[in-house]
Image 1 (cartoon, helix red, strand yellow):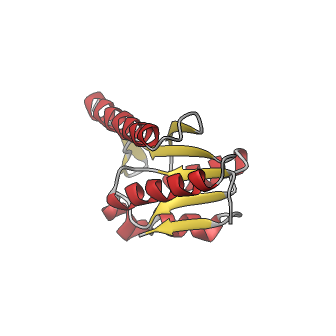
Image 2: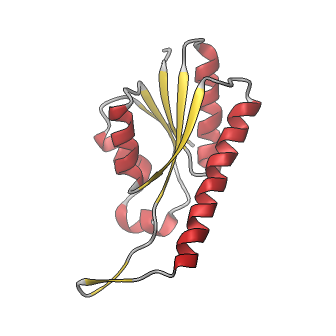
Length: 146
């Protein structure tokens, strides 16, 4: 099956690097294919009772810098793949699963490619994995790469 609008969810984890490789393979199989690689990040929020505890600005700056480096790594790997000008890399702030699903809907993606396990192991244990949430709510095919 050939896909034209490929959405790659990338977080820099081992599984998402494998997902990136699979997205490249699918794009190489279809000369008309385009990859939208997105890196979703969010700033931590800590609640105490009904209020939000402020997070130091330096922590948010460090998280943003890490997100930028992750997006740059995806761009570098896509550049090296030889599919230049057939992709876009974006950073999105928000909830990972929700942001991926909204992006897929708004960009008419044909398929979502995502790693089976990302970097958020503690949140995953408590809330469920991002890939599981995406599979449960996506309106298009989802390829989970192990």
